[in-house]
Length: 294
Length: 335
Image (cartoon, rainbow over the protein chains, first blue to last red):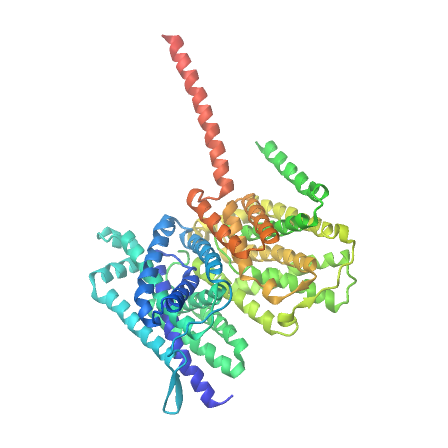
């Protein structure tokens, strides 16, 4: 173990962590507004990655340019899933049922992806994917920096939408209390659908960077979704800021532990971190202290 | 009503007991064995999650620890391969239950949907540990004492042990439903705060239910390891297992006694059949997911409840029709 490796791991942890923060923000937004845990988020990231893959391999469209197509596509996919299945969920078992339903959706997608793209892992390529440059003696991989920039831009856009627009006010009202929001005339149903679309659309960006930094196939989605779920629970379910902080924190801790104790323990590290935090704060870092039963 | 119900159970038992004697094709016997094993797991899962409403998605922890208990003890005590190894099945259950106590103590302190995610985290901690510790054999796996009984009836002892396990779990689950303890679990599902207010010791009740379900799932895991004869961490701790048994229970009817059995029987035999005959895992994923979504959209309470409601409604309608004819005749005779 040396200091440079440690600093590298920490730096990459923060850069890639921002992407997980972006994907987890979509997940926690959906939970906060709709009480739905979307476990299909993992496979939708892979869908985003495969879409970028197909666009770049078959049509020669640049990865970043392709986002102009993949983000709206996944937005529509999200709206279809919400309208077809999730809108039907009601009652006290809603959250638990949403896990099973979105899991079923993700199985169908997983099977389809396996048939369309085969199970052989692929990776996204472009001339800049493996470029890096040196600043102050440290290597910065271009794709990590680009991912970080992308995450910052999209998260800022999301925040602008939430805090500076009329629609954002409806979303935040629904986050705070759905019944009261409906009482003051907010169409909670419409807000939910659009939020789900947005929550899914961010996976397109996450998936593109994910696919450029690692090889993937449909079954890598299990690893992704378990990380994303860990992030939103650690941050406090429904808390946007919590998801961002926890996203960066988890990847950072995972990377640092990976350098100190070996890569095989890095995944273990964040599950252990999650359990330690939950022992002290069962509602997560920024979760609202609410009734035990929701 | 009660008598016809009992008759159905006896009939079903007869069919299951006679099945391998009639169908001697070993590949179908294997399918039947796996179906029974998953029936046992789905019914165990339902015993806690179905009754209490706390959806656990980390039951693979208990399945895997049961499996590894069987493997490690039989290997390290140099057990003679054979039926004596079945004595390790309850030991596997006990080890799983011993893990369930601390995990449940940590996991059940949080709200219901956080519990779901925590169980997933537990699962990945165990899977990770099993892959990375050396005593589990790592990714190379472990080989159990090789069972040498005749190839002609290789599956039969396993089949009947699995059947026995299912019977045990069904009786246990039925007993829980009728007991004060079961009522407390279901009270927690309906309104935990009110149950607490009415004096139910919710923490103790939840932990007991969680541990019981871990015990029976651990036993199933031990049978699984013995049947396979070799065990790998990545298959003993399989994330698909966690979600499959929850889906099976929902598919048939969560919280009912028969539902998880029916769900597991249909889905697991379908999966095994597709794997054996088409060896196409992707097709199965699409079918499983699609079937689940269809059931969810048209029978949101699960198949068993849907069928029961349809039958009772039909009976009620017929009764009403007869009554209205009687009424019409009575009115007719008056005029």
